[in-house]
Image 1 (cartoon, helix red, strand yellow):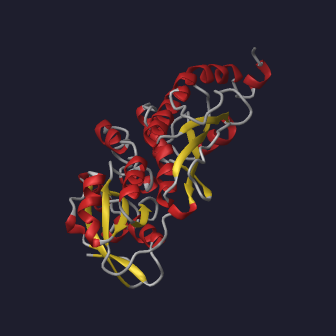
Image 2: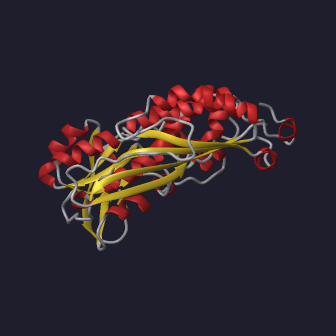
Image 3: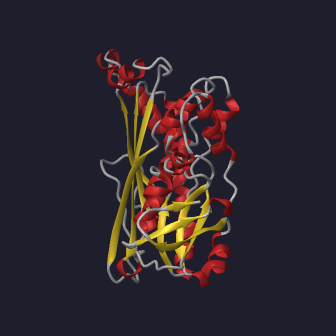
Length: 343
């Protein structure tokens, strides 16, 4: 069925139908126990497994990918940005000890190009598989006038434009919720990031404003998808007492680490304990060359600097935790205080 009048207004419903057909196979491969039916209903359904739980608690998270989507648009490479979308939500809820159950997405665009939409959903499906959750629904909306006017406001914007948002729900038994139980002397372990992840891209794009359109290798590096830590963390908390978990996203070290600590305690970070990836050194250096002041404190207050997630464990559990996590390393310790110290 066509709708010529709606198409004349900038919305192609036929393209929407095609996009749904193209994404079906990607959605279906995320289905896990608990999904009673497939794509196409008015609501996503999920039957949670409550066996063995004393007091089930639902934990939800919602987020987007920010202007990292603009890097994908520059490369016309859309098959990984969906991983970022899932990561930004699933990595948050696992900080509570919750196992993600299902995910829903929202894709807004100037123009619905079915193949590009399907690539985005492929990435979302990849992320769901990595996080062990099901993609049970979503929405794609053409907003030609709204997004086009925003795109036209900056000369570096492409004609087509996307915005992504996601929503994830997980479950945890209340006695197993990760509580803020850190004490002085406990150790902070950092889990290696895969790069910049999905925050700080307004600054990244400003710093690299003169090179992004011509440096494909740089764009590909920046487009590296956010690492999903769900399975590592869930394995860890089954075997080691975890006293706090922080997802290092917007706000970097200074904002996120205190969120998992009791009042009166803070983190003392030693930045020499790990090798900061080259991409962060390049951001700082390029900012300096372009006349922008991006001091080290701003870098640690914006980016993950190679540490995508932080867990707090007892000193005696450090070796076991590192063995379980695989790509983790000590980054500091818990001390008395109120402000994160990085030296």
